[in-house]
Image 1 (tube, rainbow, N blue to C red):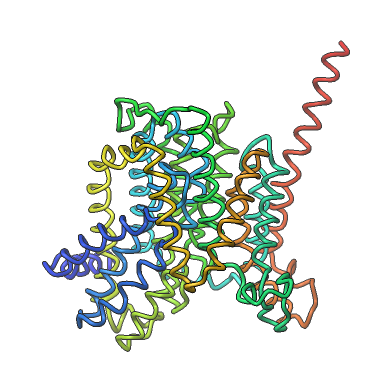
Image 2 (cartoon, rainbow, N blue to C red):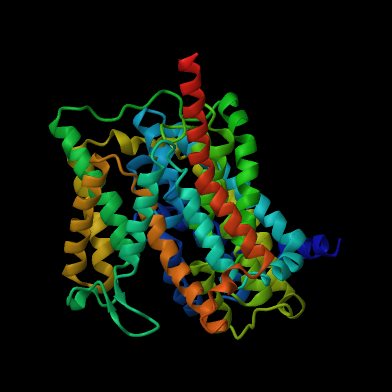
Length: 503
């Protein structure tokens, strides 16, 4: 009851005219920034952080603005993922697997609308979880040390093998390719150059945006140009822009399961929406894909990652507020906002600054409602992007992509590298390799390496620490089951078919 009364007090802060205006503005701008490939929530929040401070906004108003931009970016990332097969941020990578095939079938409106509702459900459940369980869950998150985090990342990689049904080997190989790309650069522990081949431009490693834009945007442009040259027409839209009752009913339990899963992963510092969406998609595929439709345009394949990544985004506020540990890269930027206002996050924050904390939590409810109200009516407008001729759309995507990549280091080398990765991605697509696991492997590699180093440093090099705790051991067993069960199932099925033929 105490939490409920605190939340009501938070709504009194959130519904003040200035805060409502900032929330509306942040939601709209965040959606626009989210749909632009390469920007994403971290850049969106980082752009508005100095602006909020320069305007001398009160701390609760500044956090409401930044949180609304964050939420808007999470919503917006799905738009380009579905329409153009170019995820707006890493959390939307899994949305491309079924979202873009739906768009190619003329069902872009259905994919956009079901993903908007899934995002709403995921964020709503997660925000309710913050209100009810923040203190308890923050203590549970403390049980995850470096060894447990490493085991969690291994489990996330293992689940990728089941992501695209009949191609588990290609999915895992793609993940390892992504990990190899992440190893390029200077080793943070020893200062040794790794896989740079004497090129100084690679000493800082390959930036995430270069990999994403190259493998997705550039390769997608090459596919579009190939289709245009082959005389294939533009994607046609069906008359229906919203999901029907049957599609909503089939996705309802998917949304709920993925939302709870995403929330649980979101409260783990550093896990993030990328891990949440990957695990949610692969879990839902194992549970629901009885007809083998995932990957070919199943609305549940859109609902699962969108519910999970939005739930994870909201859940990441728990470690930030209760422990002072950022739950994601974006909340790390928001943590900087708190320090600018001389506010120390941690368990005492709920007592010393209740207006800031509960005003922020209440604004998450308001922002979530604003976003679903904004996004559903705009489904038709977003869908019209598909009717733009490739002769116009390809240069437009290219312009946005080149500007986004060049803006990182103002380096022409990044542009060349982006094109090279784009051609590589195009070849992989022609060989029927999924590109999603490459991005996920690239993201997970840094987390895995960092936590492995920490664990081995704590144990003085003893590898036994990775299996010492019941939690890490459970995750290792789950990873082994996920990897071996499909193989065992296939062998048993093949033996059964052989016995049937003999009879």
